[in-house]
Length: 444
Image 1 (cartoon, rainbow, N blue to C red):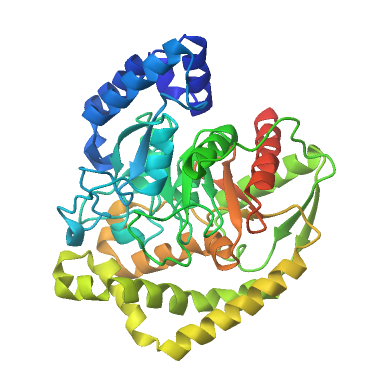
Image 2 (image 1 turned 90 degrees about the vertical axis):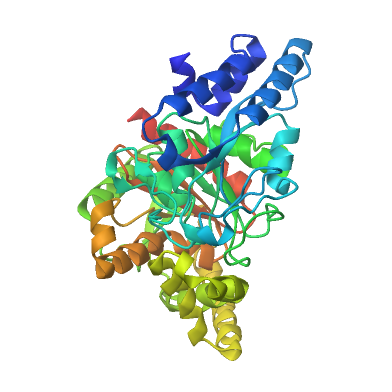
């Protein structure tokens, strides 16, 4: 059964369909692994064994009767602790929400459950999802699979760790500025950032609702396609016959290449070379609108986040991790006219970006410009924390600001990812391109 813990969600689903894997035994294998893991309490905020076993038993009965609900019926996954779970605390990684128990599941959890996925529990996260590092002294800081003394990336930190350490077949997280893609990259996983508005946010603890998105962290692009369909309640993208021959990619050269550490740079360059070898045409382009959009982040993100959370935060600010509290309070410094003007500027930047990349199938960037930072240094050095948090989010934020969908893939170098970005609503095309790119990167 140990091998089950290393299989993709899609392969587990196929094993269940073939009668080779019993969903109950699979669920117990994961629950036993979670219980025995020395870092379990740094990864899972709450485990839901009763729910998981009941859902697995129902999946096993459907499998026996030939009535499976989806390709992932019976596959156990984890959920970031901002998705409402009926009868189970959902606290958003914050003492401010301690003891908050919703009455019903988030819409995406209900959708996935209706298609037979098994809920293992809730994973730790950055406080109220407002950090790219995954560092959370208020609750727990999940480890990076490649360096347990370093952060796993945020804000879907426990989501990534649950998959990377073999404690879930896949995980569902959220991405407002990079919160799926950063931890996916730092833990050598595939991570999908969906288009804002495409997947329901109902029953999800918000950060900045105009940028919040829901997406999976998993072991393959096929898994990402199946999980995306489960979240939407739709049909999975057809990944058959995906190829790079004839594809046109653009490597973005401005902003995302600044302060790029040696390892991510070398990994990205090697990955791009492999895409070329597989038949893709790759150009380098500079898009000035990205430079124009980046300074708008502070106003747009902090104003919306503080506007949503001000009353809760100011009622008990001492309950928060000081670095996150400080970031929220930056929203005090912007006026209503500032916020409206920033959105007007961003809309113009988005239009310019769309024109600049219109001839390309996808835009390529290094997912994160540096490797995951050390936890102790983040604890002891305020300036280092600030600099690393902003830098960790910089490359991924391009897709959020420009309203794109994006996919990060692992490279040969640990904790280094390459991201593909496509037009809004283009998830199916993105996943097909991602499958072809994944094949090219694995073949070499």
